[in-house]
Length: 328
Image (cartoon, rainbow, N blue to C red; front, side):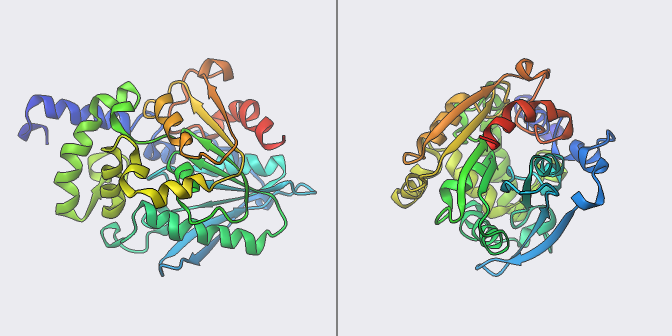
């Protein structure tokens, strides 16, 4: 690819790869040899997989992690970031069971275990995930865990889903993690420097031609459905992100979320700036929002970043940041 590109564009492609695929990317997280919390968990803490069918007719795979503590304090639903498979949240899910919560993780259509054919055949987009996948997961939770407090933990786009769903159903409260608008000129400097290349060159050239985003081949994120990538691009080119592009109906959905939201930001997030995060949470105009910015040094780490906080080596951070929120 570099031989056919001007040096400036080739350099941008390489820089984008280093940001979209940092030291804690999905691929590395998947292959890292260090033992995980889940590896050390007893069989009683293992997950049980379920396949559910959405109103759109496609299936979504979710996993249930049951706490062995009595009484159970509630159920947490972990909504993943774009392109991050649910198994990468397993350490965090098992840790949550140790606090006394049942946990549900899931893959959006076209991601991880919810791929039943090549991703180019997936017709979902981001709003499809919000309109179909997330409600199906919440219906499952409401059916099987009725009476328990439901806490939505949304990582990046998983936090967006809270405001894009038709309603928040059984959700009692939410925690968003590294969740902000994708408006590229407000991104953190490492991403802002090269995001223009992704949205103005790479995506328009590859996605219409191939019918999907070839993240695996490019080593940038992972393979993503065409609808997801093109819709995400349209939103990221707008000052007001999705709400500006989609209009009043989506603005109303965000405004109608009236539950408590705890927003966690990481000071070294290489993608989401505090501006991005404040802009996204400002759209939850009917919610009671508390914000917390976590610096790595304050929780005993050199780096946290956008991806990777959900791996077992960050347990001390979970204890300092998440425990007070979950048990309050």
